[in-house]
Image 1 (cartoon, helix red, strand yellow):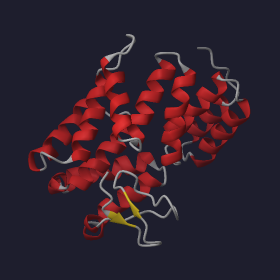
Image 2: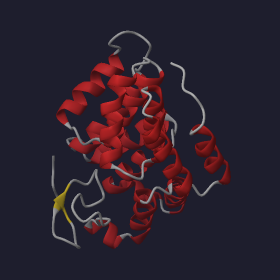
Image 3: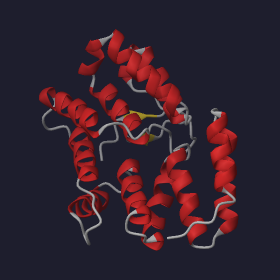
Length: 229
């Protein structure tokens, strides 16, 4: 992993894929973001869990400043936002392939393209191709939040394996506490495993952070809904 970001608050090194200092929890800023405040604003919204706002800002930057798509940092951030927003896989792959033209050996871009392609190959089959790729990727990059989430979600909702899904989703949420889709999925896993106190706590936390009234209601209702696998 390439530790090329230094936290301005406490001086700790971290990976660009994390975005938040693992020690003091402040949002970390790259040199590119200092030069492009719009990217820094998008990243701030994203790291704070305001996914809809981050997505709107990213789409606006893409439209208003097409040259932003030449920025590897923006492409990675946009990709992560789209993955969390369940954006179209064709769009995600297109962005990554476009960035790889100028950065053909970039490990982060290649890794996220691997994530996107693996998600497209997930199926109900035993040891399906997507699951194998994601498992191997996580072995190589255990802090890839989105690989952890996608595999955990798949194992739970498709493979009906709450126990295996648990460790992937817990790791995803540990690394990115404001990843509310992952938290909601983890709450469902907790309910399936009869860990009701944790499930209700996570649902209530998601409800308290949600800005959309419909999402607040969803999380509140979900806390009282039984899960049948």
